[in-house]
Image (tube, rainbow, N blue to C red; front, side, top):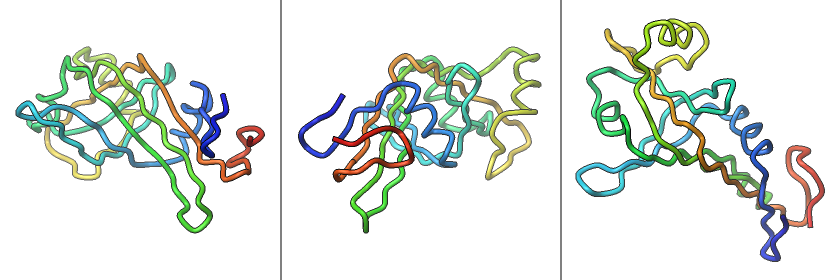
Length: 146
């Protein structure tokens, strides 16, 4: 799990734990056959799925529904040359089940730009990868550095 370049690969559980520590990430999707990246607030569901909340009429909701996307979040301390980055890759889907929508309304992320009709987007975590810039030390109590 250690690399010689000052980075340490993180396991899935470490990655999911780190995602709970930051409020904003970036969703990467395709727009007009080109990569698009949008900052979003998010939360995690119990199974590690990434949850986003957006306007039902948004370009994002239409672009990602049924598509494979990537979601990235990180935390960097440039002065200490320390930090981490986590990427979740998986299929995104707009939540359509009314009972699930009610549940997510109670526990899911709150929209920073509320709209009259909002939907939740769930990214199923098919691949979860991450790495920590160790700089010869451990960050956030995740384990020993190299």
